[in-house]
Image 1 (cartoon, rainbow, N blue to C red):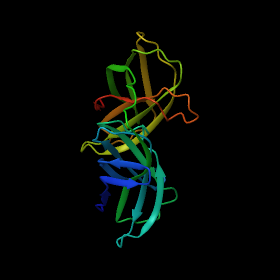
Image 2: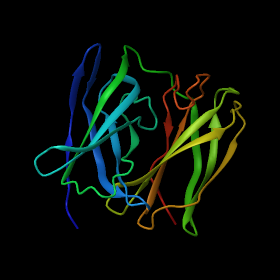
Image 3: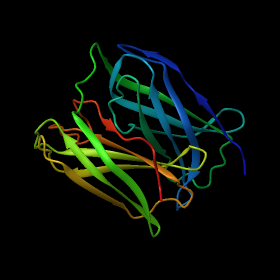
Length: 228
């Protein structure tokens, strides 16, 4: 198997937007069921700066550094809060015939705020992950200190035994939460790569934006869960 290298950008400045110390890690280039290439991984914010509306760029490169294909996508969650992380998936449509030697991932746009977004006000309890045929099921209980009927969304990152991301899943359709009322959660994922051994879950929102995946709050995230 060819070993590909990624170019990690730790510092990026552009007009009116400064995103510093955003570290890409646990990334790799994988093929989907149709043979197309996808870059998956994590982006960390190791600063005290709140970033919002993040967009990442991904490029496939040949041996001379020429761009074979490019694409953009937002990480999940889009709000990269201080000292947190997000997962990303950069898919290259109709790329199955390409033979990249390396790839490049970097943040290309976003906004920064002087103050962090407010905390989501939730805690997680009894979260577990279980194999379910070719997929998996994540279950647990969400406890909220706030009542909000607006929709919530979510993200899942599946990892292999080396800790690298193998799949990112973006989730919609969560209802509101009620303060002091535990909310059971059961998330069936129909298809998960056989090499996935662990998973992490983010709860994102609430939002009244036309973009369901944009939020005015810091996302809440579980620890990494072993898939049993």
